[in-house]
Image (cartoon, rainbow, N blue to C red):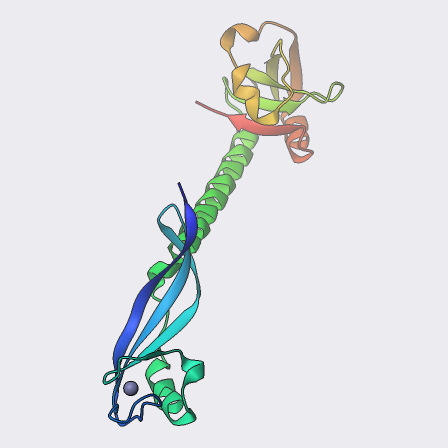
Length: 202
Ligand SMILES: [Zn+2]
């Protein structure tokens, strides 16, 4: 199955009057059509590629492309083709991609804002994703006590090699090991240094 390629659609058509067909004696009018060409992927138009022009003598039915015609006809046609634009739907794919990027950027920014908010106001049950400094792996720690200036956490027993896979080891039964305490300021610093790179709160 071909899932990408190019297609054409008619953008405009009309008549040229008072033109002399180079091929026959009687021809004085021509029919013209302007086609737009666009690239598509899976039926979704991505972006325009160009335009083609077809002119046909109404009398002898010979078809011409623009290059073959005398200057006088070209000039008349020039007036017809000015202002013919690609419709917006030719850009559907590009519009979808741009919107998706904007949404993803917005969500990621929102997520970062929440992380900062959570770091500044720690709460019992918060889970910090952290970079394990010695192994280069990733692990997590869970907040179990919050005092006026400090927090206490327990560490996850496991580490994982991918930043984004931390959810796989974030299970209640995995938090059994060392208890550790930090001042709230230390936690902020660890977050600024990206040692803590994500905060999850239910
Ligand atoms: Zn003709």
